[in-house]
Length: 281
Image (cartoon, rainbow, N blue to C red; front, top):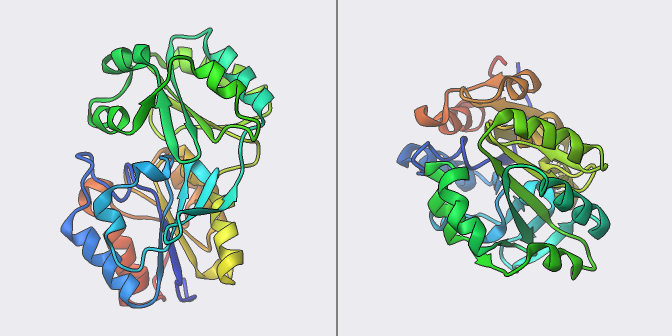
């Protein structure tokens, strides 16, 4: 039985809060708003930058915080200022970029809440980026002439690298080579890779918010589907995996809900927050 009242829900977007059409359904919106009306903090936790948060999500009243770029930036949405920034050291970001250039992949960068790409990457997006993500990727990136030169200029380090592949064997080889550099490597899609500073994940952001709001771990609920969600699912008192989640995400969770195409996030909120907090896990 889970008996602790939930006071904060942190929820992944793609594959969790959003269905495969990248839509938030009326049932999901209603569940979020009802939880917010009860004083529960709703916190989007995403691999996206803050600029990539959907407008209809930001329109939900009572949304105060967001964990972005897999925990690299935890944001106060009211002020637009970061609560915590945990960037990849510049030398490691450059080393990771140079390694990735040896593989057949598309590499984009995130910095200070903005995504960056090149004209060559835009042209290659039709090959590398999944159909249901391509518009989001192309519409949320600014174009630079040289990504490596941009990294070189970032004295504070780099927020995140995000990479798309077309071949999983190639991805696995690149993964091993990059991970050996001492950075955190995760995946949110079958053919992607996301690089953050060592020890940084969505769980890092969740713990920063719990400390800020003085909330016990037992009052935290986290929901996700991808490898980049495991950190927060393990960190929360109640970790919920989607029915469509990767097997290792399900293994890390206390509870498995329905899929993102079956309003699984709404179902979990209804079960553990809106009905009562004494449900069997």
